[in-house]
Length: 415
Image 1 (tube, rainbow, N blue to C red):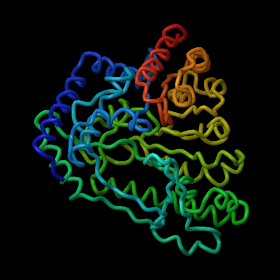
Image 2: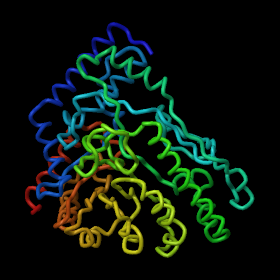
Image 3: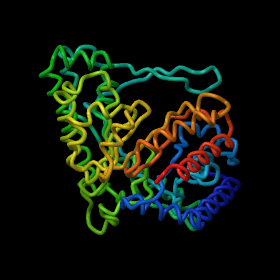
């Protein structure tokens, strides 16, 4: 990895800009608001517009570096503060440059390929996984022990590379986000949705055996990270999967002694099981998820799946649950009633259609959408994390207005 003198000067300039934002009074106030929110003290809901899905419309036009390595690093810098600079949401700007260990986890040592489709303009339109299991009973022997590890030299090399460019301005910091486990996603990538669902019916005992192996291998991977000293605190502005941040006072803030998996956040979801009944979820899926969840300190659960379907029978029983996803397909009112007064964050994902589909924002319809959430979540600790927006039609003003409307509705309707 090398950059030119020209690129180094640009990167140092952008690093200075990030540090200025990080030390600004507004950023410090947002940081305090997240701390207040994490203590479940009364106050306004927190807002985060997830950038990465449409960052291609904002970041490349700002890049001035010439080398590939320089542009990648410049992109990483902008990703740390464009929310703050452009949208005005509650994403906190760090006063450091985060670097994570480059680890890997290959379930059952499977190499699963993908076939990509282009939109004809050079961008990736979609992809399809090349499944390696077509019949679970016939192909079960293909399931080898899972493999995992860490690329230590490459991680250290990258850290040294960044430190040499702007470490005197913006220090690097080794950190991590939540430990993430999505067992059913792994199975769907491996065998496809149809095969996974029919396997529960055709080979129920074998399916239970396989998904229990998934749980054991995830746990082995996370416990290996613990043993290797690869865990870092997840109590501040680190990213918690699903558009949230890790703020909490209920986990260790420092690594004065080696951290355990029980000292950090975990994240899990099971989007792929929306088509099965609560009884089937309880029988085939939940034992795996509950088994993994017990090794985390705190748990954030759910992505796009409507969690209300499995809430009463299973998800509500997760003892360390601290945040739960209320997706666009979720029964907001039901979950509001379930979470009212409880120490579980109502992590609302508004529909991405308002911001992402039409070029012009339908402000009236969007206001009604947010009003419905604010009514349903009264008495809950509310976050709004806007995800799955793949275009803003190159309109930064539209995205900024989107956040302004949410803030305006909170001001008018939140108690």
